[in-house]
Amino acid sequence: MFAARRSWGVHHLPRSVLLALVREVGEASELLQWVPDDQISDWLEVEGHREKLAGELADVFIYLHYLAQSVGIDLDEAVAHKIKVNEQRFPEQTGPADAPGDRPTGP
Image 1: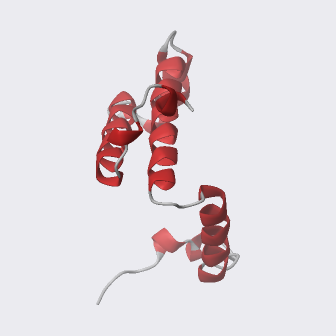
Image 2: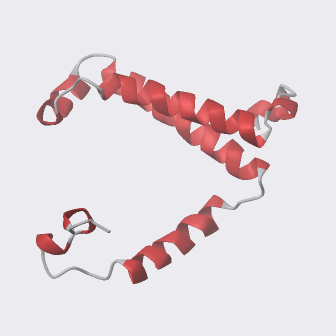
Image 3: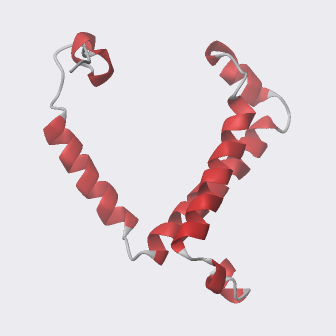
């Protein structure tokens, strides 16, 4: 592994890795922060933009992997479990009005 070959593992404590992950998510979000939703496809076609976003997303993925590894979580198993939980929590909808974000919130 990249970090192990450089003896960086001593720096991969869960809190440090989580903070690095948050920083990388921030860097990815900066790229799209002011791009209107209906213009993202065009933005991605500008030379270098797709590659820059891909690089930031790769950094997010790498740090997420390091974090999971540092706390002994198998991401494949965790994702499969979470999907099952969400399938039970949010059964197939009958229409757009049933989507979780459209439900009224309140006390």
